Image (cartoon, rainbow, N blue to C red):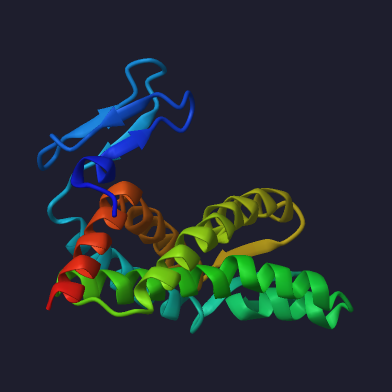
Length: 211
């Protein structure tokens, strides 16, 4: 079984220099002395922050899916598009594979990540451990790199600059809701330190086995 000192050892992701970060206190962070890369940060309220950001982000996503995203007006014609219709339009155009990829990256995976964050952080904040927490935690950290919320927002902004010259574009409530969701998604993920998370999860596991 790994010792407590082993649990506090972390290798720099850039240069592999090994550090013992067990002496960090609340609010302190560790950076690599060789290359300056970030190692870990200790926050006693990290789980509460993740919960708040996750709940707020999911509310914003629900708003983003419930109202018009963008509307286009040109030569007396108007077209209104909702967020789910962005993928639906690609499907109707005869490209179902691309539609599934777009829907997964901008809606399904980000929503799943936020739900996992909320479920796991809530259990850990209450000092409760379940057998499904470790496999779902591994799934969470794998999925986060596939949630391209920020990429989608940037892509929409770039597209708007090109479309604005051909039609009148009206930004709907959904656009701002998804933009807020993107912000809270980044805040939730940045509040979750990988090393501290796994150490706390391991402590809960050991405590549940000792009962």
